[in-house]
Length: 296
Image 1 (spheres, rainbow, N blue to C red):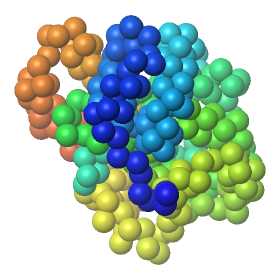
Image 2 (cartoon, rainbow, N blue to C red):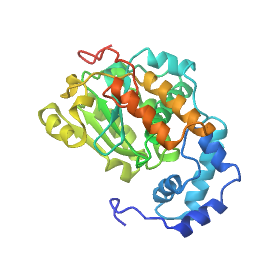
Image 3 (cartoon, one colour):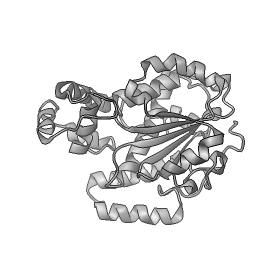
Image 4 (cartoon, helix red, strand yellow):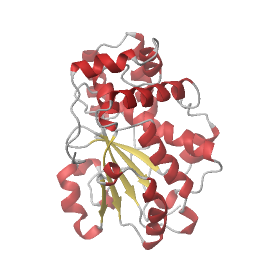
């Protein structure tokens, strides 16, 4: 089967995979700001295992166990999160033209994580924020779009552990979440890292990765993004929106939804009101200064 022709689950598949999961699966997933045990969520796991229900069930059961322990939502006060928020290197820019959250990272602002635990914590924090923002829109397809600004990337920014942790999470705990990933202005230093990590990246994931350079960025980005949501430094017409502000709003909305105090309509009203204050459509109340030259 071609990687571009994913398996399409049916109702029988959903019934069979639910039989393989623990009774509290829905509650565990919902408490981690995921959709809960919906057909939409199950579809991602079944597609990730190419229609093999037993394999998908085993994978999802491991994920549920992970969510009970090391994969619990990460608080902003966590050391690994606090240290990396200070670098001002990850932004959540709103939704692309297909309604997917836009996660933007600035490579030159990254410093090697102090530990794999810190790397895992910050990546979970960022991914869960994107998921929570996506889930606040009923028509979200479950995927997000990533843009990594790799201008001025140097040895001090090279972090094989960070790449390994990110792809490990995407493949084992956030399957079928990545819609597209744009690597902007990747320098030679990045290709050495990419060669080291690419053998461990799923072939389907590789098809979603696009290397983009300044000479054709405007044309490529305009197909996918409203340019008002991309920073001017990347050829857009907008500002930078720090992920921590999106995180706080997303967690607030997710908590209301999970407690039953927020209906889909009222949730949409809150997001619409937020959009009035910021073109990012994720209720970020102002933007942190973006990197003028993508340096620390």
